[in-house]
Length: 160
Image 1 (cartoon, helix red, strand yellow):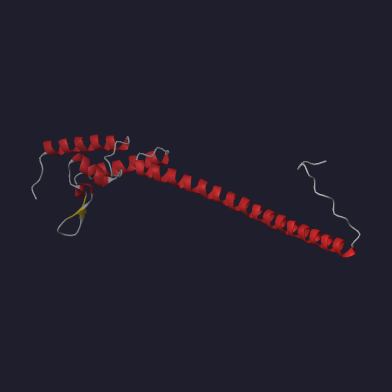
Image 2: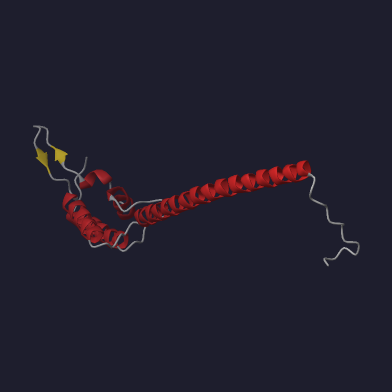
């Protein structure tokens, strides 16, 4: 692979720094993340230039733009620790996590209210059934004794 000139290296570094600034301010292309891959794509350089290389003898040497990749990751981590998420997808994930937690809380409250209402309904139905049984018992008792008279129904349809 041919070596690049000092002028090309300087232009690439300027392009990487400009792309780094754009990405860290949240100006991400659609569907991208705030990472080295997107940085390389936006700067127009190979992603492998940000990683260490191996010499033929097995020793490692820094990649041509590895220092910029490390600077990018350090700045990104600093922003994230400060609470300034630059990745809209990460912000969306955080927002959705908060929304899920709130919805779980609402569902738990609704389940509790539903259990309370179910208990109330069961109690009300059992009381109504007991009252109905008592009314039936009293009616049967009244007809068996024979000393109770039925009142005549009102003729006009209104109460006396």
